[in-house]
Image (cartoon, rainbow, N blue to C red; front, side, top):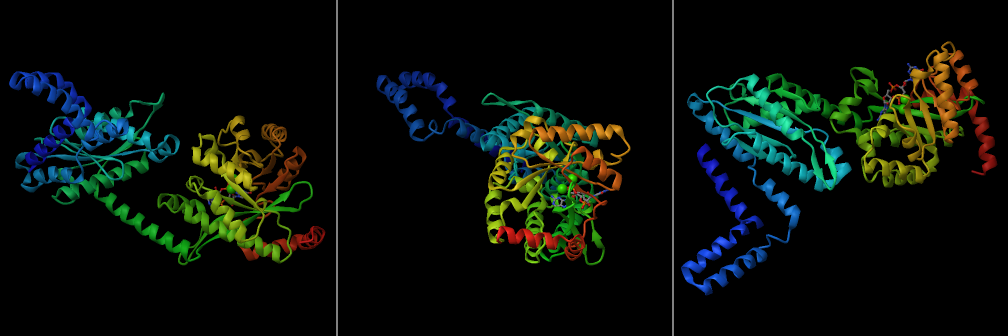
Length: 510
Ligand code: C2E
Ligand code: CA
Ligand code: CA
């Protein structure tokens, strides 16, 4: 079976090569042969006819893309890997064994975002070639639907963990060499999972390939550039993760994940300048779960956008309710994840939501982590942030001071406010170094025309120092802890914001 699949691949490969333009290099020799055998008439027919046939068959017209696609098409597919593995596993291997590897690219989404689909095709084609070159004749290399590769090793007498790890490292090195495309050097890394025949959960090719895939997923979670051997616990862990995903979906759809609200105040007047919406999971059995315990699970499950929708909807609902009850709450802040910022329809969606709630875009503060903009945000992310700014939403740079954003980056985005990270605020009243850093950040913000908000203000001393240093807004346990919507209403009442709001509403004629 192995032999049959190998010869099938071989014939297909020769056929595809003959369809390539390079095959015309043989034209002079073929023409000469035709002249020899049949005279001048045959020479003319062959010399003119062959190029015509190639052209009509469309070999030349597709250009570079077709070339890349051809190179990818030369590789085997999933069924051939399974067949090759089955051939060894089925009869107990007859003293021979094999191994299966699955290779997945790290951060392929980022590459796609930054350089587009052509770059992705180029990377896949080149990597495919390099993998074939790094492996031995008889090893089957297949491309997988998800954009990775699978390898079934040619049967050997002995294969151990150590040699598989070395082989995986060799394949990673082959893929890691830079790829030039339109004058840009692309660098990619990959994570690899593998399964030895002796460790396969069942003596079947499909089971072995699935096991290598599970190991590759585990490697990717620990990546970039990780290698993992299949172990039975991995499958169990995956089942647990699937169950958690289902639980999270139910939680998001069933209203178990809700925003708690933490006030932000003006440092000069003490008036409320807004609330930040912070996610909480009200678990029916486990009680209240903070975001630190479920955000990464949401991200891994690909549910970040769903969380964003839920939070935005509830935050805007709260803002409308405060308006209706006559409180003056200028804005509500919502945290946006990278996954949400990658959605090309984000601005459109937000505009629609704000229209639906009849709220001015300036009432929404979009909190974006400094790390997100600092690490070279993709085109879509940059476009979205600019679009949200142009729409009139306030853009707040969250955890400022921890993400190393350059001044150029800060100026590039139409930011409204820097949210100074808690690490600069703690003990600001006693620590001169903290004061120096805060003064530098605040004066830089002033020069750049940006407002400032200090996060994690816990003590009256810190609060007084920040006000003295000229920080515009304050947020932290020292003002109030995050609280559910109903409590936020009581807190607003205790602040006496309703009267202020009534006056303002009257003067603006709303
Ligand atoms: P963050 O955006 O920096 O939010 C501020 C965090 O600091 C909150 O933690 C808040 O409870 C806490 N905090 C506020 N004042 C003080 C203080 O005076 N002292 C101390 N020690 N901590 C204070 P929380 O609610 O646990 O949220 C943690 C992080 O989870 C948030 O950090 C934010 O990055 C993320 N997060 C929360 N909700 C969402 C969400 O809906 N979407 C996304 N993408 N991320 C969220
Ligand atoms: Ca935040
Ligand atoms: Ca923060």
